Length: 92
Image (cartoon, rainbow, N blue to C red; front, top):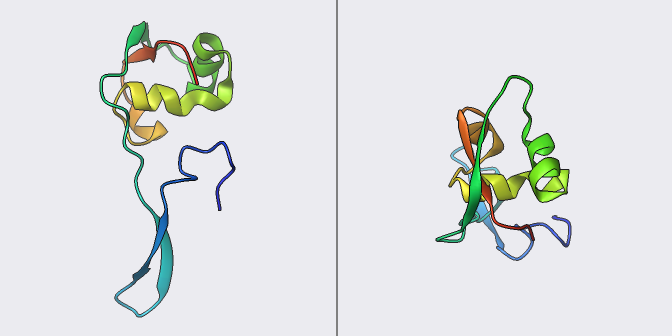
């Protein structure tokens, strides 16, 4: 279901029965590591995208999710609404 390097790959899946009787598979939610260190902050400017910020600060645009984790945001959309983004120390 997920790529082998996905943060979701080892979280496990479970089946849920919806009110209409359909069964769907769901994945447990990722929990950000507590106490992740920050190297500093980036003040958002027009045109900033999380993949571009990840490329700039983490040297890999696919690591945008680490920006979400460092800022305790469950999704990229939630982080994009913030004017100030904490930049995690290093990258995975």
